[in-house]
Image (cartoon, rainbow over all chains, first blue to last red; front, side, top):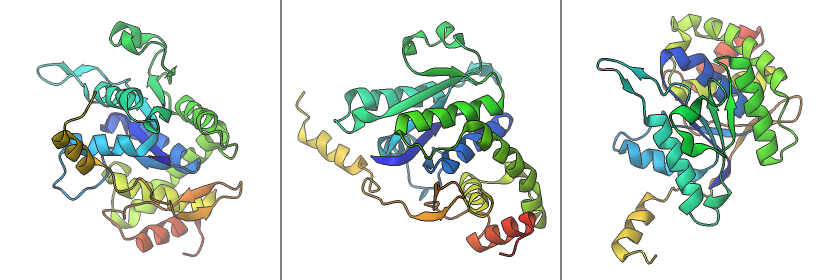
Length: 201
Length: 62
């Protein structure tokens, strides 16, 4: 298990893209290495095995269950986030001594909403971001500082300001290739954020 | 609970190879945070292209 690796469990939809990039940005800006199911692989990986392997690697987990809604036709809830949250908590509970050191933060869009559909997670570290990127960044930074005991993790408000500048710069950076921010793959996102931070933060 | 041999073997196969990976540092911010080098290369760009695009957007040389 790597003490720099942070597992990100969240929706991978266009309407969540700015939230997802905000979590990536905060994790990288805080000196950690983001991991998630969107990592490129060799193509021969079974998705569930890949997720288990990534979870096993990560000491920290950021879980956003705010989009566990019914959608599509027929309308069915999206269960991937609760499943991956369960895997992470299970690894902490049943894994070896090292795995028991895992730390998790859980986000929903409103405080206590989870009690209506996943009440068994009561007692975990659950926060509300109210569908706003800034509180999400502030909470993630504060939690990483607290959980890792690294005093170097910057304040969340400062990271949120930097993220706003990055998102303004991103279309400019992509203009030469006529691409939009949502066209980037996970590995593109990580590289752009890391390179931008090294030059600008 | 004792794990049968065949299950132990499956667990061993699942074991990550990155457990002892030492992260490389890409650079350090002004406030002293070490920004880690991404483990995988970007998909749609080379790293040099990303650096160039970042430098251009920030009005700095690559």
